Amino acid sequence: MADRGFRKLWFPGCGLDGCPRVYASLGYDVWATDISRSAVAVQRQMAEQPYDGLRDEDISRLRYYLPNLQSWTHGALHAHVHDFREPFPWGECDCILNIRSFQGLPSDSLNKASRTFYTALREGGHAFFDTQNVQGDSRDVLEDALLDVGFTLPGIETQRWYRHAIRDAGIIANFVMGRPVLSRKGARYRGRGADAAAKADEELLIDISAQYQRRVEASSEEQQRIWNDTTITIAHIVYNTG
Image (cartoon, rainbow, N blue to C red; front, side, top):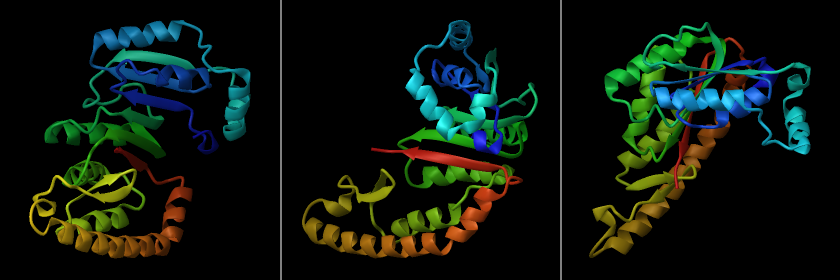
């Protein structure tokens, strides 16, 4: 983030997470917001305490990856009660980090939050959405909400082709650590003929995955162009599964 000049970070729906305090200790100006007053109170308590969780060698390593850090004097942690479906009132930010407080929203709230996040970011800003066990068409829902308000999701066409090709082939699979794995919970893989069906689907999955890899390679230059363009506002959805 530092190599792009990102300095002002927003953690919407921060809860009791310690990340805002860590980033503030590294020199970032951090806004941590939540609708819970008790969560904000805890964030404020953390902001008042010196952070000593990083050793000198850790700081040195981080400065290797974040060279701009050594020229910053200090950061700050600002904690406020705020509903992230409402406009962000503290000026534009460079980067948003939403940790597992986006995926469970109902449709209307999802759309409102997406609009808030997009308008809160400066041109060329990035938003990261950390999720847990989001599978299948539920991924389309999250992605559509962000795409509809103007975010660019690098590689989305290729990723969606992969998921939809697996679904349309009738294969019952979940993504685990980024790779599709047959779901033995599916009726297709139980009872008489289950082993044959699973074997056939495994072979088909290998073929689809090979096609996906070729698509990734073919689009690599375009994806690099997007990453290098500092005028594009980008969203990243991290699909944690396992």
